Amino acid sequence: MTRPQEVDTAQIRARYPDVFDRPASARLAMPAMIVAALAILVYGLVDLDFSPSRFFAGLSQLGWISVMMIPPDPGSSLPVYLKALGETLSIALLGTTLAAVFALPVSLLAARNIVPNILRFPVRRFLDSIRGVDTLIWALVWINVVGLGPFAGVLAIAVSDFGAFGKLFSEAIEGADQKQVEGIRASGGSALHEIRFGLMPQVLPVIAGQVLYFIESNTRSATIIGIVGAGGIGLQLAEQIRVLEWQKVSFLILMILVAVAAIDFISGKLRFAIIGRRAVA
Image (cartoon, rainbow, N blue to C red; front, side, top):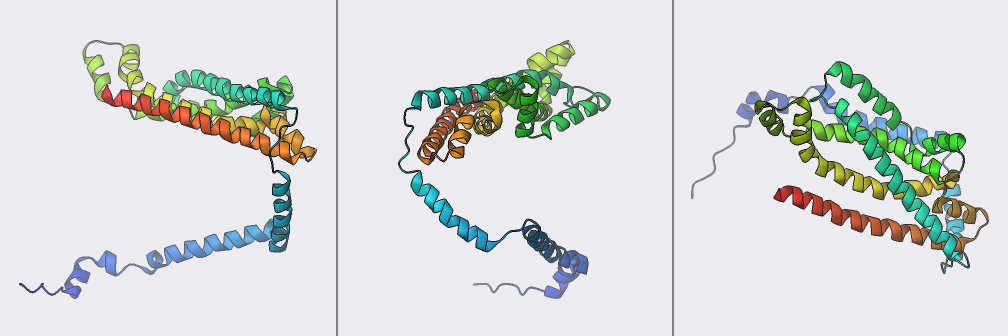
């Protein structure tokens, strides 16, 4: 057996000085970031009046509420709850669909491989401004505009997702393979032909997968905005919490969990089918 060669540490250090002789600023950067993060955490806990005694005292209250939730019981309100759940699913589906329909043409104006930067920049900032406002805030705005009910919830989700879809769709368009576009251009196709036959067949499966995911996510969002008056099962949940009907609260929570799990299962199957079909194509 041959003996392994002895490593010349001095020669290696001389060859790679940046690795062995790092400046003090580089060596202290990570510890400084950790200390700064801990300092911010401690400051935030103090500023927000975090109290361990209050936290542990609240655990007993949480345990009492959990006991009062068992067993889940809708009482005589099951038909009302089923209708409210249907409203929530409709809000999520309609709001997401409207957002996708309106965001697709706008996303073309936000893609760098379609329009020049002078036109793309304001469209991007417009989408950023819409996306920067949370769905709950949009729900409060639309409730004051069109009144209480599911219509305000649909508009809130549609506007909020419009900004998110515009960004996601434009990024999918920018990441598309340009060889198909160049082939259509070389065969004499117009700019619309390049978009229709070169880009859209590539990005539509990606867009469909994103829309399916958002429908699942917006089912939870529709529940939250229902609490502030946008209809659906969230409104029923808020009312039962307000009157301390904990058995009905637990039943409503179970309904929401089952609905979200079912939508997640269905959307996952659909996304897999779309991706599989795209891979075969």
